[in-house]
Image 1: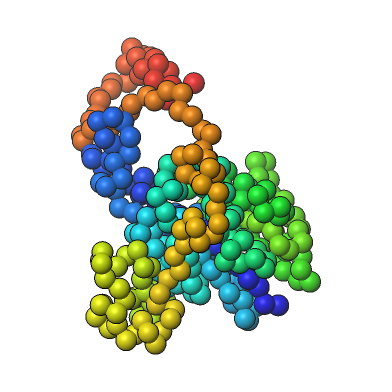
Image 2: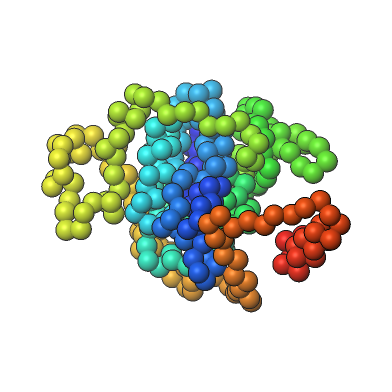
Length: 295
């Protein structure tokens, strides 16, 4: 059974390795000080898609990501592991999007690039937001069934997918007709490593936005490769390309409002020495309660 699979992926700052410069004086994440990585749970989702591709010859796996030009690295990383290609959704109009505006842009892009999609797979949540909202919202906007907290795809036969999902208190096995949307847990199987042959094949793949300003593919070294190997030109879409409603994109389409901001600034080598006395322990608990770290 040939499948048309779309994987939703995001490039995120690596908040797992917080250093002394990770926060700005205003208490926000200093994205320029943190390396950009493939969102970990999206890698778990990619592995599930690639397993289906291995089991179903003729299946195509397409990655869709939204972000600035450097986010195209996510598409290349997916292609190094076995994805067939991808699309970078980029436009200044998408800036400042909350989960509602993000899911609108992604669902509209999917309608454009994969109108006959069989399966949409994404990570449960991104480590720079931890909302777990985008996947379910994409499903709602496309009118598709959804299975969240996926641990493993058990089978796919006769248009029915059977999935094991991990929930509080146990494990469920559920079924859904295709097309549907899956969100995958970080506890699912890790993604396979890069394939050396695929790295060599796709290492020069670029999105148009990654080109130096005022240049084209013909101005690059190895320009002839881009003429002969169309797969080296990654897909790139903006608002106009997908006929998106600007009122539902970016900040304009984001109803989420920040009520208050509490600045928490990490400093290098910040530490506190405690003894085992009741006074020190009680003081620490009071401090943690006052800062809402616990309680």
